[in-house]
Amino acid sequence: MFVDCRILQKNSCSAIIGSGLEENRNSSEPMTACLATPRGICNGTMNGEPVLFIADSNSSSIRVVSLQTGSVNNLIGGDSDPTVH
Image 1 (cartoon, helix red, strand yellow):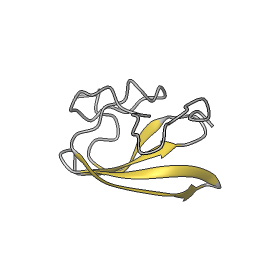
Image 2: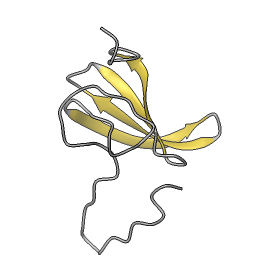
Image 3: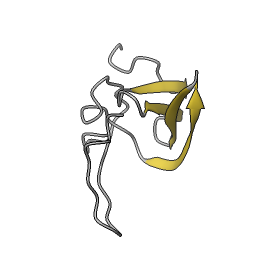
Image 4: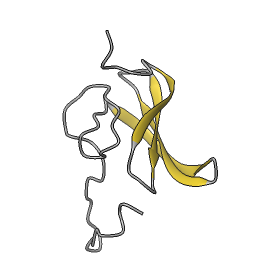
């Protein structure tokens, strides 16, 4: 898993995805993806792979993060490829 190399102290928090910019940008590189006001998160599986589901309110979408690779993709809502206008 892409997050295995992270060592967190008790009661700490660390970013595992997102560039910090507010936009709807998918990416195979977790730290270059962008979220637009994420409001909810839950874990689950999709196609047998562990994932995180993120409710991204400003883009009106559900984003899915692969816990195997770190890739961030649009599951439903918003633009499937926000780089194409």
